[in-house]
Image (cartoon, rainbow, N blue to C red; front, side, top):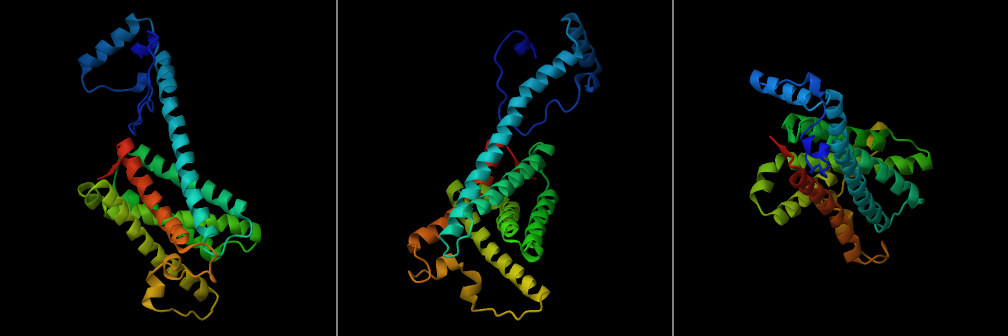
Length: 277
């Protein structure tokens, strides 16, 4: 407040600490002497509490805009890799733009919700909160996959959203249970291990979704070998007849999708000072 009053440029650093949530007039101080001194300084400077509230809002507004840009940027990269992975899988959507739009919107929503969760707790998130948010994402994705709309346009939007919610929930679970490991091992190794875990869990969750879809419609379900169940199709079968894209492009795009997801979670936590405790 003093710096801005003296026309000194103030830049609000990226942080999950809250500021401006309580009006200055309603704020409390643990020391009565400090509270009296602060009140006297405000009065002697001929400023009102509303002036301070307004300057605090203007200063923290930049942080909120920065968080919005981060959500859009992270959401864009995740949506881009999801769409690219689907397009080179051999079964591209009939209308890629709709699929990308649904994926991008859901990615921005997911990143914003995770940021809001961290901001509410000022960067120190309890494991129970992370587990609850992760389960909410997984249930939302599963519901869209099993009971989603059959209309082609709505299906393209909902299928991209379901993939985003499922993978976000699994990434949060891996971050929850791998926090200690990721903090002790090298940064790059943590990203690789996290991506491998998310890929394995994603395959298992896909089996659960397919089984539930078939059982809800009373249709027989055939499970293949353990390799077909646990190894992603992008890494298992790669022939020119099945897929015109080179094997390296197909597998590399698929792996890059999950590496980017884990990297975003870990890098955002380090940049903003968030942690699970």
